[in-house]
Length: 159
Image (cartoon, rainbow, N blue to C red; front, top):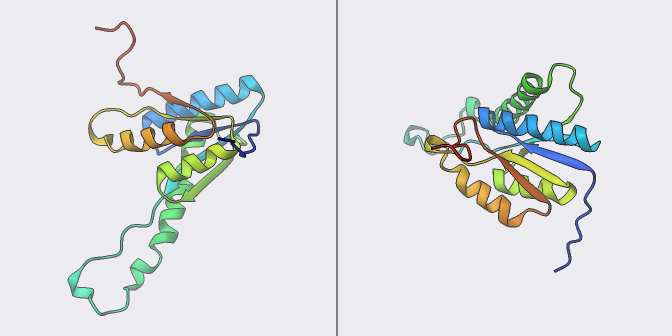
C-alpha cells in the first residue's frame, strides 16, 4: 500500500482538556522543540444531538438551540486556548485548531500531514470511551503515535 500523505515537520498534540492531555501537550511541545519542528494543538468537537423533548415536537427549534454548533465550536476553541496558556504560557505561538467531528476521525486526518501525533493514553474509570478512540487512532494513523500515560497510570516496576 502506498501512502500518499505528505508529512511535514509537525508534531500534533491532540487534547481534550483533561490533566492527561495536558501531560501529552507538554510532551509534544518538548519533542517539537528538541527536533525543531512545528507544534499544532488540536481538539475535536461535536454538536449536541437534537432535542428529543416531546413538548417541542412539530415546532420550530427554539432559539436557544439554534446556536448550539456555534457554542460547541467556541467552547472547544476556548478550551484549546486555555490549555495552551496553562501548559505553554501566555506567549506561546503554536497553531491551534478546534475541528468539528468525531475525535478519532479528526485525529487520524491530522496525521496525514504530521510526523508525530501525541495524545493521552487511555485511563481507567470515567474515560473508558477513550480506549475506542485511542485504538482507532493507533490502527489508522499515517504517522507515529505516542500515547502519554496520565498522572495516575501505574509506573514500570511499581507494585
